[in-house]
Image (cartoon, rainbow, N blue to C red; front, top):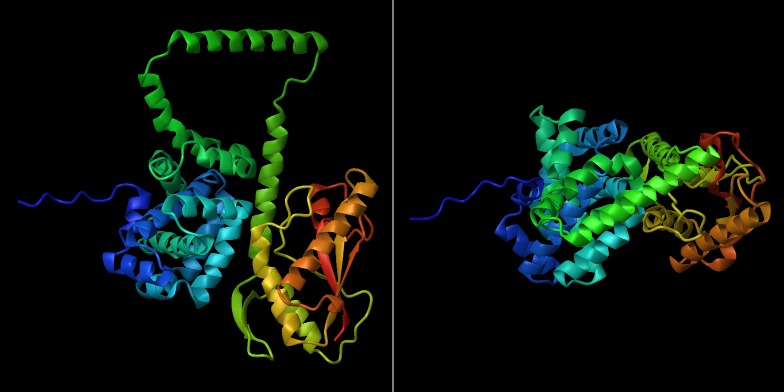
Length: 414
């Protein structure tokens, strides 16, 4: 008598249940990998992406953005799943993934890809494709929930938080905490506690030995001495993490608002036949329209701000999520070979002006270098750091400072 198959219980299992053995084999053939490696890599990719979502489970604005994406693109995603394994994400589904991953995992995408490769024994290329394949599987699952009327902000947050303990089956211990804490701050606290709940229970079951008790005693004494010291000097004891949490929430909300402000993605064809999927109000569309408008002359006042470039904090290092827009700008310049641009780097007025000037120059130089690496001739590009000059917003507010930290470009010939 056959043993009845248990219904999948965790989100990871339920999402991957849609991958049939035939789909798994087709995906393995396309990537040139074994079916076992693909299955392992998909599990890791799905768990890591769900972990990134869970880290923001307490941010209702973020969850509503994802629900909006599911609502607008769900039917397209669901209709593509049957061919996903053999073709990979294409067209509108690929566009959704390109919007989803940078917002959800941000600069951690490379680390997740590396983990997928290590887990499944795959190189970077197939590992990246498995992560890109996991996205429509995840969004398709939530699209079904939305279609049934069971997906709202509350149910979404509950499902993600409850999934926490299950993710440990697929990811190294502490991986999610180490990866997403700096991005999500206190917003990830609830999800992080859920991720670690199973581990904590297991540790308690082992019992506290004398070494643990000694450690607790030493910690309590340290806290007591610190309290006495702070009390005597009347130092404000409010945790430093409060400020960090507020900053993270502001940054997250700003990123989500900026994402929504770009509008819907659409496909446009360049003169050389290249097709780009770009946002309606994004810098690519603005640049193309300016180049094509023969009645608008080149001047020194018309600048276009990049809207999907990300740098490491206080650094000129471009994050992987920036590649999408860099590829678009490079394609536009190749399609319009007479165009030349000046790339300008800007900072807010926080910190040392000399350091800000150097940072703005380094960032502009790195954007130029990235475009050259993508095939744009160096003599068609200039890079200039302007530091704190030419502020476009009020530096006394966080929102204003964020607008002033930018990379812009000006067409010098067309």
